[in-house]
Amino acid sequence: MTYEELEALRNKMNEEDAEAAEDMASALEQVLEENSFRRMPRSVRTAGLGFGCMEIFRHGGVYTVVRNNGSGLDKLPAYGSAEECFVSLVSAIYGVSKPKGFAKEQYERFFGE
Image (spheres, rainbow, N blue to C red):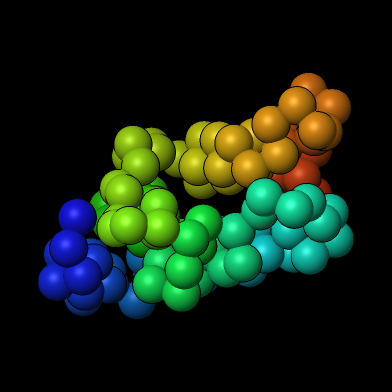
């Protein structure tokens, strides 16, 4: 993925999509801040900041995540819901260092009704 394609994803979001993506980024960054882990990304708001950083986009209810892999940008698989996106990202970041239900518990904490 190129930085031009990254900019196109940014420009494609409407106000509602941008707000949902920002809510997701805020929740993920709070989890990262409260549960430090040496391999975690430094940011989930700007993919260009360096290795491990991500940026989250939403378009038409589908979430797209772009990750800086250190030599370029990787577009992760699309996520069909906020829950799928959040749980998948938290699970990938923490792996086996957190209990099995940790990601789902964190999702409920921020987005549960």
